[in-house]
Image (cartoon, rainbow, N blue to C red; front, top):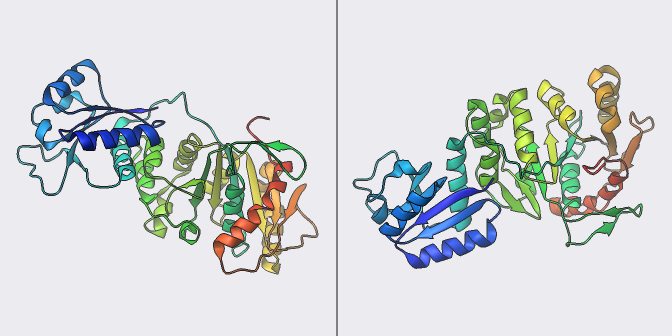
Length: 359
């Protein structure tokens, strides 16, 4: 689903720069039209319905804003808003164009409702979980996501000689209360908490909001951590399912990093996932908790067939509860990025066991 955006401003140079940038970088999300006079604006509004219109202060007083689903004022802080309805949303024109796009999508997501998008993708979902903390679960999740990032536009052979496509969009979704995202990604953006609020209110287009506020770095798309560690607690099982579905429609691969609990919400993720990376470490506590999960929880039997045990940090598992297992080395480094990058070179072995959407 592409948002039909109309930009109406008398600043022709600004209009051209905005149009060119959006057409080049955001054409998959936004269908942009531009006009620079009041007569042109009135004519365009008569001919077509627009989802969003960014209109500057010199033009907005001359039209009926009810003709646009979401009219927004394109303004600068030194301009007066006299005579303009106070309830009208505003977008500051003097900011990064990517920020303008994010703000437009975020505002439109709140009023557009849930609409079917026949052109959506649907990702292969891989959940990464452990019953024990301190085993490097987030490092494994990020390494797996990084291993899926295309290095070029060609295919490549994995360690077993299977041809693997490299033209995939990868989405990393961290659902931990205490997010590890700042330890790997440098960019900051709007918090995932705004997505939680929309889910909790059962209003708006979650996919569009995610699309509007997500960041991209190192070839991976992600959402920044919550404002507060308690924010995660407002989500219901239904909310979790909608969030997974919305993110999966934006990627080919969705990697979900989960907290070390086995509650009803995480179980929903296990069930929705195509694959589960079950991470363990070299401590006695990790081994004990893994054995408890496998023997005492009926959830394990339901997900066993799609689980791959990941023995991280050189761990030795004498009696693995799954048929599929890989071992990852212990990498000594204080550089988080270096550790994850090194681990990603070992992750392709997982593909021998993992399902794909083509199967």
